[in-house]
Amino acid sequence: MSKKVVLITGASRGIGAATAKLFAQHGYDVCLNYKSNQQAAESLQSEIRSLGVKCLCVAADVADEAQVVSLFEAVDHSLGPISVLVNNAAILKPQARLKDMSAERVNQMLCTNVTSAFICAREAVKRMSTQMGGQGGVIVNVSSVAARTGSPNEYIDYAASKGALDTLTKGLAMEVAAEGIRVNSVRPGLIYTDMHRDGGEPNRVDRLACKLPMQRGGQASEVAEAIYWLASDKSSFATGNFIDLAGGL
Ligand code: NAD
Image 1 (cartoon, protein in one colour):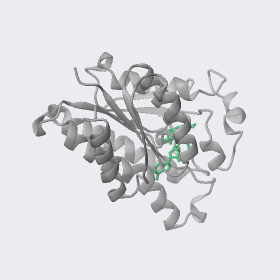
Image 2 (cartoon, protein in one colour):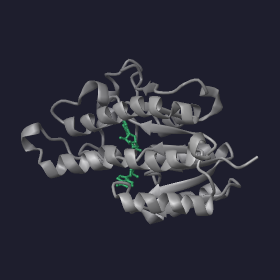
Image 3 (cartoon, helix red, strand yellow):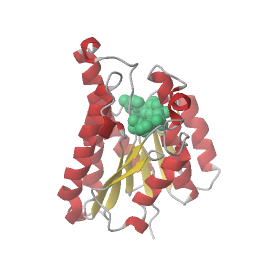
Image 4 (cartoon, helix red, strand yellow):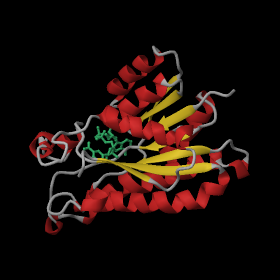
């Protein structure tokens, strides 16, 4: 039996790091992609290797097509055929209203959060497709409940990027279903990660958690469990589906 291989984008911290650890605990060889935090990525790599699986760490900006192509070639070379792609990398910018949003900000958001998922999915499908000699596989896109709420007055650019990602999930799921590839999505709500610091409000989860039906924020590990389930054979009839993990929001 060949080893299962997962590639997780933006995996040096937060939900990506928790997902990498969980897949490793289940025996997957793991490719950790990161953009710039080499120290965090290499520390996670050591932790994962100590679980007895292979772990490759690759610096690549997933918004850059050439770097994505090289990233997948590195996985081919070091770990073998990819079984699961987790499109996790994304950015959140400090809160702004539309009147203060530059085209540069919006384009960077869409390129990092959406175009990256298209090009990573393209490279994964080429390798997974049973019609192209592959063994099939699974793509999990990490979206957000912001795709449903729209995040008015603060993050409409981010919300719009996640809305586009959801449409990619639906369309691609149907496009590649006959090639043995499933495409699903998780939509987290308020999760304790450093993304909120980048979004200009480090204590956002604590401020808003009391308004949720469950009255708490979520942990990255709780999102990782859903990603793992969607990637596993336990969800073998699920494609084009979304799991919201948002404490009842
Ligand atoms: P995070 O900021 O810790 O993780 C995002 C990762 O993506 C970071 O490691 C970052 O360096 C990486 N990244 C950004 N741009 C990149 C690029 N161009 N190339 C490669 N890597 C890049 O935040 P997180 O909360 O762990 O976010 C993970 C996913 O969960 C994201 O898709 C995010 O939109 C989604 N999400 C998070 C929350 C939350 O409350 N934390 C809620 C909903 C959705």
